[in-house]
Length: 350
Image (cartoon, rainbow, N blue to C red; front, side, top):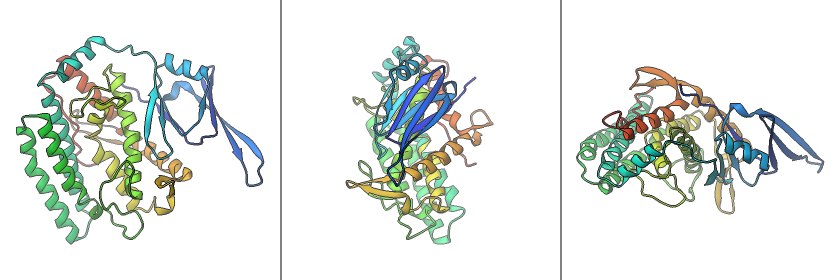
């Protein structure tokens, strides 16, 4: 049985985190408008936490590091702008034979089949989101979204027929271009400072892209935890090239979830005016969420992960936060040879 616990987000840089008697003690220094200093202490049962994500220069005790290492609770570090720095985790005690087979597939032509299915899943989910959003959009935009969906449908056969991973990457880029060309047409609220315009990253050029990149980072951390919980090496992917410091397999796994999990979530926040340009600020030329906005969005994000959605392969409803784990389990089963191919996650609307 898969059990997914909570993520502990540390947003205030003036925070010290300690662990004692299976309890995480989070101590935050507060200074009011009169310059008076105080401390806010929050105790969190350690057994309820799956991972810790720290934004900025918070401090952790050696006891916390030891506890997290022993209990396989990764501590991930992310900048105030949402850029992932890296993580601290304990000794890898996963299945060495599984990882050996994972590496063998990477060095063989077999990785093409995995890359194909990942990109097929991503493309179908992008197509399905366009169709889903078209149902509640004005006629003129409906036609544009439907046309983009049809264009992506016409490229699915090209993915299946591709002969190399490089060819797959090229097709993925073309499909993404068609999809993102219509992103603004899925935003109902105009002239709010939340327009998409075009996909930009490192750094994001506007508020919408900053929010997308921030949540993509959060979801990638979830994917890393899922993959490593089944003994896989998150650094060795099949679609993404090996790169020092990058969890390439996590970057592979997230592709199927970008449109139905992050993109739809962001569109909902914007269309409901739950997030506006007032929630962002520019610091040294970098666009970032204000601290209170970050708290609000992460709360909504965690709530959305607890919602039950259909999981077509098993023909049952599961919590959204379980799906990366179910897909990681399927990937491990494929690598072991228990199933003939890796089946991507297909979102059919919920």
